[in-house]
Amino acid sequence: ILKGKRAVVTGSNSGIGLGVAVELAKAGAEVVINSFTDRPEDHALAAQIAADTGANVRYIAADMSKGDECRALIEKAGGCDILVNNAGIQFVAPVDEFPVDKWNAIIAINLSSAFHTTAAALPGMKAKGWGRVINIASAHGLTASPFKSAYVAAKHGVVGLTKTVALEVAGKGITCNAICPGYVLTPLVEAQIPDTMKQYNMDRETVIREVMLQRQPSRQFATVEQLGGTVVFLSSPSADQITGTTISVDGGWTAL
Ligand code: NAD
Image (tube, rainbow, N blue to C red; front, top):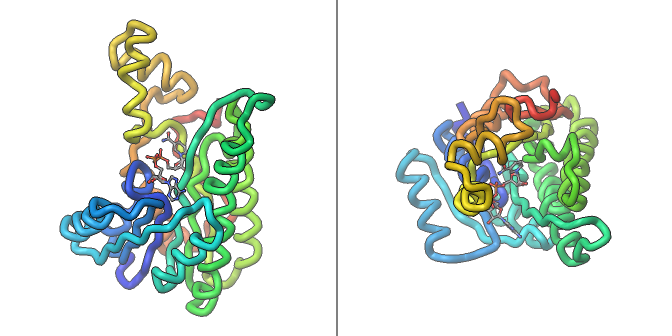
């Protein structure tokens, strides 16, 4: 259903971004994947997705902590019809001990990058009279947890940016929405399981259910495929009138 559309997914050589890129490619979109590295394996990953899906997939390196590189990514892609702002990092510390460089990096990568890529992508979308801006926020865009001040502030900022952009482009064939995942089983999360098992002397299933998914009433992870499916839905004609809102994919976290 996305034949003829070009998608750019920031921070997509791993985790949710990669899952989103694969689902967009399966739906027939041309896809640009991205991260800040420029290794042979990054380009090989693009070639692999292309081989698996039959879609045109390219890798373009750009550091989402730098505004000019965010804008250059959109330019090098040749513009885009679907922009998925996904790049993100995390750091955990009490606010009065939070390292300033970590605060600045989180605000830059998790929030400001979406401003820069959106600013660069909108003129092309307006010219075509069609576009989708989809921001991967978080349950932490709607609620808070202690020790995650920069992340929670950035993700709430992403939700605010989403609403503002939606209002500015309403009626122009362009929508802007945020997806708010709860806990998603990405390599980042998977890597924490063995240590947590040791720490609590629990088996894998108990660690997942009782420790990691304590705030997720379903006691199940969301998957990167489900996040990709949500992006494809928001890109489909069924979602033409969905704009300026958030879709939670969080197993009930924000209903509590
Ligand atoms: P991940 O670490 O697997 O993926 C992050 C991606 O961002 C990677 O591809 C990484 O290379 C890229 N990236 C990091 N810094 C970058 C930079 N400076 N420039 C360009 N790319 C950069 O993590 P993930 O879990 O897939 O997270 C993806 C997004 O989903 C993030 O915005 C995160 O906040 C959000 N999220 C994740 C979860 C979860 O449980 N995993 C939950 C809610 C929201």
